[in-house]
Length: 154
Image (cartoon, rainbow, N blue to C red):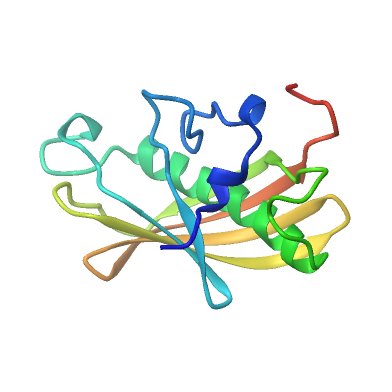
């Protein structure tokens, strides 16, 4: 399996609850390219419950959020023809997050989050991401990801 985008985040920027590999209590999502799309797989746990049998919407929003900011970073490296371990690192934060819940997401299986870059403009990348449960789209989101200034969070 290829190395995930999040595995390239410098240690000071790898503590995010959703995508930080150094956050033992977090989701630690892993995102990779699949052609022109990005993909993350995540299995919600019983404690991610909204009501019995269904996934908490906040979890879905956080998966869309972190999947999309990781996609933004990878897209910027790709657009500039750079390797993900090149310096200075690209790291993005959320400028805006919009989520549409299309149908309830059942608890008890793996979710697949797929993202597409909609726009790259300067320090901003717009990403659309869709959550699938058993191949059915259950949520769709759009994230405006903004490149962090150098030295932010260090």
